[in-house]
Length: 359
Image 1 (tube, rainbow, N blue to C red):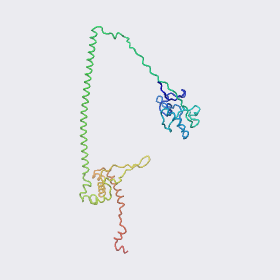
Image 2 (cartoon, rainbow, N blue to C red):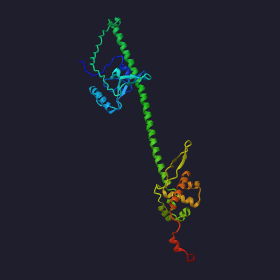
Image 3 (cartoon, helix red, strand yellow):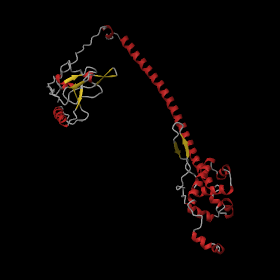
Image 4 (cartoon, rainbow, N blue to C red):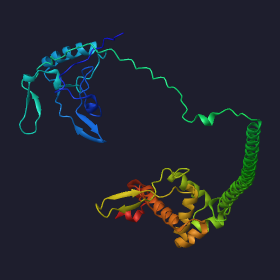
């Protein structure tokens, strides 16, 4: 039975072979046409030299192209295509409709917008059936090797040979079984060692957790902190110069936030060597809460301690102490700078001495 399929035929001189055109590149949008701009031979990509043309930009000419191409695409079973990127190869135009430039050999249409008109269809030849394989006859050149044993001695020799071969096979199997048992024993020992290591790692993890918890408890209950010093009014005033109630009122007025979210912390500025542009790099997140930071600042301001001594008192790195001090200095400057420190005119007139008023 022969099947009818639509294919486009061209002369062998102009139409390249399938092996030449197969590969990556821009393909022709006409069904059955295997033209492509590039070919791959010996893993090298090169041009085929076939001319390709895009759909014209003029709406009227483009409409004619779409009507013709869509008609033959429906016959090939592929109706939808992209009009912006679709290409039509030179084999769908007549010889006198194409011109070739002398320099680079670029192929162009003599009249822009010429509609493709070559769509010849032929019946394909029926597929040839494969011939059945030739029947092979087994022949023996040396018939002596296939002689039937005539005497009983030959039968006994063959039997003894088979017994010996069976014993040899059994010995080989025993050796393999012993080797397998050794491998299994080694694997069992490795599994036991892995279990021991796993248990030790779990114990170390639990110990690490307990140590971290103990460390957090020690940090929270350190001696020199706001929580411990605020209980003693005399000691708190000698450290900060304020009573605990005055400290709380000032902290409430400043309102830095529970986690100091209302404070913009000091940021280091790094300058690029090539462009000299500054890029801000924020420091680490503070580990002291707002009250302890304010207590640290007032202790440093009241007593004039060095940053090394303050870092020892509060058990924090020297770099973090410097960052806290610079941040709170700027914060208090902007907060307290807006507070009016001079009396109003009415207050001055009310409290002015009488001798000043007479003069």
